[in-house]
Length: 267
Image (cartoon, rainbow, N blue to C red; front, side, top):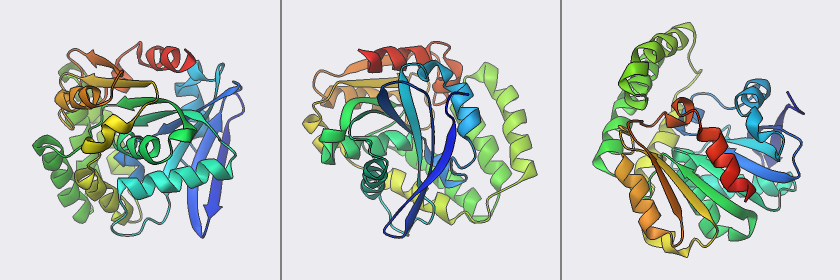
């Protein structure tokens, strides 16, 4: 696909994997969810450029992982600082920031602590503070990770992410992926998982002033749809779109998802 690049940035001994593609004049940064703890975006430039090809015409798209060697206790705010450093290293001075799930938590802190680099903000299936639903999901995955049971994590993710009609198909695919390989270590995933249930930017959300779109699913079994509504209530002038009947995996299930994000960022 268009200008697909696999790259790394190194800042103060901290290595971060990223990919980029597209030929647009505006920059757009995507921050993936907690699954990044199991596998970074290294080597994924071509698949991502195909999946998000609708963005390639209008934007230069970057997808950033968290640092390869995360330190225990790293928070979502710390991860936002690492992302800010990576953006500066690549001369990304201002961009639309699209955060998915944990990526949305990181995006909140980037917008709060470095508003000058955030042109527009898109927060997808994410939350601003912990709730019992996300704590339950993270606790389940944490137990599985501590047992080294990668397949169980993948199957649980499928079951919690998708609408009923897609769960069966997704569990077959995720189960296969979980059977053919697993991370060398689950430490990075455990650090990222913990940061999700300690994330709390709720009280500061009213400081965000950039145009913001919040996208949620009414049937989200990981962060809840109410979490998206809560964010929208706190960010003045923000737009909220809820997908009825879809859950945490709506970014894969909703046919108009990419178009919706692109149109908002192009305004």
